[in-house]
Image (cartoon, rainbow, N blue to C red):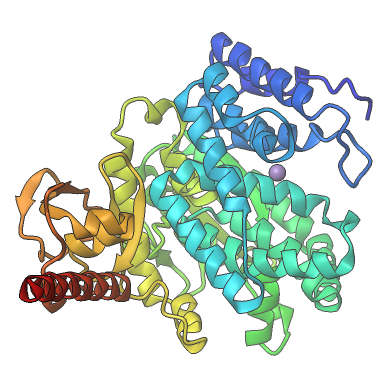
Length: 494
Ligand code: MN
């Protein structure tokens, strides 16, 4: 690849993806030029010019149809870390939003620990970053995805570490965010490097099955498409999907490695325009083929915990082959592939209050995380970092994670010891509250300090939750006593 990587493919992708305007193309081009100039002379391990990487990240963000600021931030995500260009310069050229996201990705990149601690630290950082601005996570996902695509050039020891991180952190978070496509790809890339033998075995099996069942699938696709159209259904799209390797492997382990027991190896997807058409399509399918009893699942009426919606049914075709159908609306489909990122799509983004929307999602995700095996695993490791944690915002949008039932005083000490020591009044979501009132996730807390205050009150020890606040209060109270005694002694000397 020559040093003169061309902007054209990105421009074309923008033009072909509905929501973007001509100004967006110009904006993105400027970000591209800045990234290219900043990374000039740098190479990736693949031997290509470095800018190939942020370029690929931006392409993925356009695939998700995220707002143009996210795409620009994707182009610039490695600039402050690896080049002489600073976040301030990015802010000057592209505004606050882009600069804040680039900064968020950069901060996410620093990890100080190794081993288990590194794992937890990573997870914690991801959550904090998500709570602050979920768009940072989309950039980080696209970044990591491109790195996985070229992982083969990385030394083996490092490769395994990265693959494990992807399997244990990125894939579960993608799953919780409902980003099925990213979850599947993350798992497959990681699987390939973590268990190459099992990966190759599964991949081979999958290829064989696809070769065998492919023709029947294609015929069914055509038949179904015709039948649905004849019945007056407005089809948005009909396509086949093949199961991801890792997900197949997990299923095979459950079924004695017998591939004939896996019915959803390949599935046919029917995408329609509204919910009533989903049920209409299901009816038509069942008049064409015999459904397998007990295999009809209505995830529209009862969505999966991560929000997934579709109708699933498994049927016999005329040759007795088993086919799985997934029926959903366009909206459900985009949600299933891109999850929370679908909420952030360009067209919706401008009109909705992003903070409220995101906080609702965050609360939902936290709740789910507390109920899943993922959290149980953390439990096994005796790591309770996320158990009973809440995320509290400062008025300028900084986020602090605190134990459940923390109070404004805990929050004040989490910001700074001086703020804790001189705290006089607290507001939660703009309402004046008692200094000992419990905080909830998503609360915005403001501490008003009294500069003349001598120090904390020993009464605070009765309600603070964090070790940090407790020890700071004790220190200050001790010091106050000492100075009181000292002044007493001074006086008695007189
Ligand atoms: Mn990167």
